[in-house]
Structure formats: structure tokens, C-alpha cells
Image 1 (cartoon, one colour):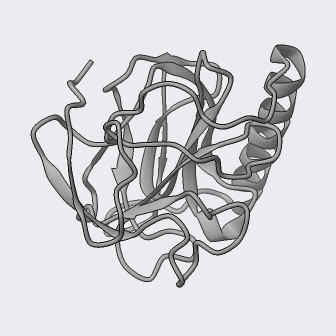
Image 2: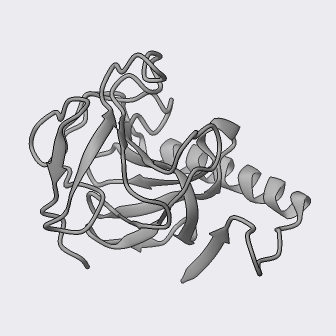
Length: 194
């Protein structure tokens, strides 16, 4: 049930580079197969997405939609960078099936988790320090899926969160907790643990 991906650190052994490459390839194939068999379509994200951390907590949006630093292209335009501390709990914003939970095929994302939701869209959680589940596992909304980090092109610990088109990885307009939080705002979570 649990497949653990971690970043090497004190007392931890680095994963074999070949095994990591195979894992990335398997994750990419799993995403392609899942989208092909379920017929995901490109559309604006539907449904209610809770904040990707435990209920009652608030964290600042360090970069919001269309942020000038790195949220300027189609893949990041509607993403949020949330200033969570390193090695902190990241929760599923809706229930769904894990599609990717490993080093991303795109180095900039580092360790990422992508979850396919019943509404046909995916959520992406990037720059993680650790992920817990294997592709194919179903997780309920609120389940802890990994810990924040600064893998990939992150310059400080944070969570890069986005609702994406499962076929193209293009970010989609969506909300967190029912609204579109701007850069500098604090988002209070109602995401109860599952």
C-alpha cells in the first residue's frame, strides 16, 4: 500500500539512479494509460478543492495565479506556491487515484504526486521531500500523501499546488476553499484528515 520516496539526507541512502529513472518512466506511462482509458477531457476544473494541509491551519500564498516569478506559462499559470515549512504534511484536496508518486519526468517539479479525481481532472503537488503512495492507490480527501520539501527547481521549502489537465499537465482555473487566493493572502484549511 505505501511506497516511500525520499530525498537522501543524514542517515538515508540514495536511491539507485537507474531505479529512479525506471520509476519516472513507469509513472509517465501510468499517467498516459490512465488518461487514455478514462477519457479525460480538457476543461476548467470542476468541484470543490480544499486546502492541501490539515484543517484549522493557515499558510501564506507566496506566489499565486499568474505570479511573475514562475507562474507565467500554461503549465503554471493557475498554480499556487504555498509557504508550508519543510517536511510538513501535504493532504489530498479531493479523493482520487494516485497517478504519479515519485520523481517527476520534469526535473523542475522534483518529487511530485498527481491525483486523478472523479471530476476527470488531476491535482499536482510538487517539490515534495517524500511521497507515500504508489500509482493506482486510491486516497480519500484529507489523506496525507507526502511531506513538503524543496526538490527540483525550488529555491526554498514550499508546496507547488495546481489543478491540471491530466492529458497535457496544463494548469486549469480553480479555487482553494471556494475562492482564488492571491499572492500574500493566508488560506485557512477546512481539510479534515482521512
